[in-house]
Length: 182
Ligand code: SF4
Image 1: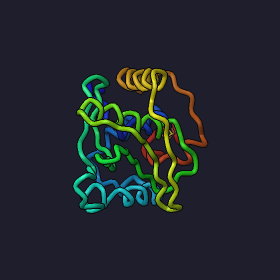
Image 2: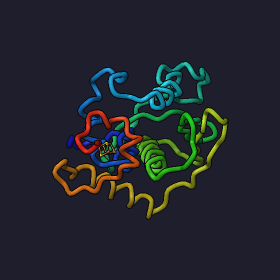
Image 3: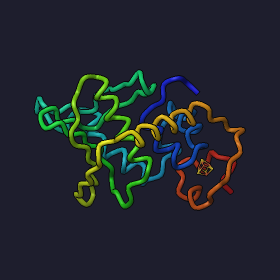
């Protein structure tokens, strides 16, 4: 696997390590070929941010590229308000805050720090029901966990022993491509 880890793949890896292979393999293909309608709705939720149309206020950074040399991470943030130092990650609908969501915002947090920004507040925003979920700033154990997952991702091989979770396979956007799904 390449040296730098994409922030967007952290959540996939936590969901299923094998999905990271398909994420990278098919990232250059037309997403409609394999994405479910659920995933497409999530993507559309980010459209305004990716095309920088969400807000024109100067203190809001939208969809900017971020990186961290320390972690070997690259990616984008949804929104960062420089004035109130608030980092926001939007999801189409949040029912559960999965570990992958935490790792994603921690990764963004550390990238912003390394780039010279101060972050005081992190929140996840659930668009469809207009709910905010405030996330505590990461401490040592969260930082170590992020390092641990990144290292696992760098070492991961499709040949590694793997225990399938059919419930996850049923929800997986790569199930038509993966030989584990029946
Ligand atoms: S279909 Fe199942 S095993 Fe394959 S990537 Fe998806 S969750 Fe993982």
